[in-house]
Image 1 (cartoon, helix red, strand yellow):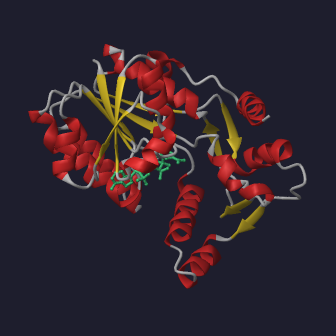
Image 2 (spheres, rainbow, N blue to C red):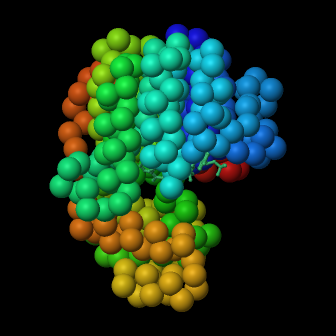
Length: 282
Ligand SMILES: NC(=O)c1ccc[n+]([C@@H]2O[C@H](COP(=O)([O-])OP(=O)(O)OC[C@H]3O[C@@H](n4cnc5c(N)ncnc54)[C@H](OP(=O)(O)O)[C@@H]3O)[C@@H](O)[C@H]2O)c1
């Protein structure tokens, strides 16, 4: 397998995967809505093509000559992207499709629209006839940077559930390993990091290192956050509030044993990741 198309490479979870695939010797083609935006992140070592993942023609063209495709598109485009790839796959030379789902994407949670989309995307990929590897990750440690809000750490909801936070470098390594392993064919891997940490406690630990002046983590009740988001017509905040309420309710799910055996368990702890981040910022 030589050339991998990455959909969503400019995104939070997609960028480290694109870089790791490249570092591991794959040719990486990135399909992006804005070539300029993608070029700001990726040098000439990466091929960049223009396209919208919701457009079947764009997907078909981008897949030409690719042996694998990694899907890490978010929002309303996530399901159409997966359906378009699944539809184009039988007439392509694809040998593997990899897709980022989520560790709570199970039938009993289909009531939440994001999970309904993810399960429909998984079903389309599984039934398209091309080998696949699906990843169902928990929370990346890097999300703590966002919730720290430049020293005004804020969470919506209670956020007392514990999650096995993982470093994106570990996820990227696991995706790349999957492309190099027959044992990863037609598997769905739950990805949990090495330690279970209550969400709020993880954010407190992050702020203690990077925002020592931050007094405490502010908590915005989900109902109030939704009301504020609606009044401000802020769709992103509304989605964040709904997602926070969802995770308060369902917590973390899944058994990472098989992923750990086949792909190597995530090893980077929160303290190690923070140390690496401190060094990269200095
Ligand atoms: N973030 C987390 O904590 C987390 C945890 C577990 C699983 N996941 C899953 O991981 C996946 C990626 O999430 P993320 O946080 O990395 O999202 P993100 O940062 O919002 O990135 C999304 C990517 O999708 C691209 N995209 C969106 N609409 C597109 C379209 N119509 N055509 C082409 N590209 C399009 C974006 O490109 P532009 O640059 O053009 O916007 C961007 O590269 C999602 O399925 C998410 O559910 C995320």
